[in-house]
Image (cartoon, rainbow, N blue to C red; front, side):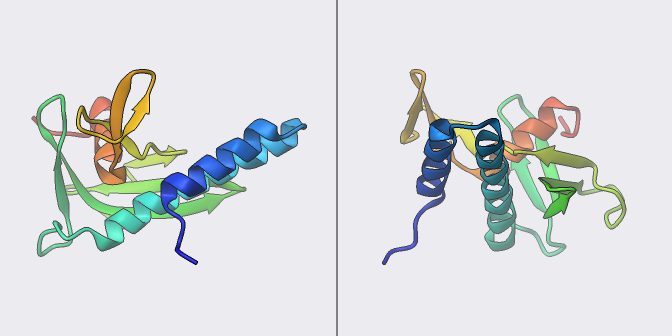
Length: 141
C-alpha cells in the first residue's frame, strides 16, 4: 500500500474532526492536525537539500528580504505540539526564537495545485514558516 501524503492525512483528520460529535473529538482532531503539520515542517527541514555548510537555510519571503533558519524542531509540552525555530546569526541551543503551534504548511502560489476560496497554494512547510516569522519581525531586508 502506498504511503499517504501529508495532504491525504490532513484531509482525513479534518474530516474526522468535522464528523466529531463531541467537543473533545474536535479538539483531538485539531491537536492531531497540529502534530501532522509540525512533523511536516521538521521532515522538510531534515531533508532540505538547500542548507549551507553550517546547516542553515536562507528562505526568501514575499514581502522582500529573507529569513535565515538555523534549526527547526518539533516539541510537545503538556499535550501541545509546536515547531521551535532558531534563526541564523543568533545563539542557537537555548530557547527558540519562535515557537509556532499548528504551523502553516501552505504558501500562496498562482501555479499551486491546491485551491482554497479562489486562491491557489502549494505545500512548502519551510517557506510557510519563514513567511510567519517574517511577518513577526524575524526576517531581514
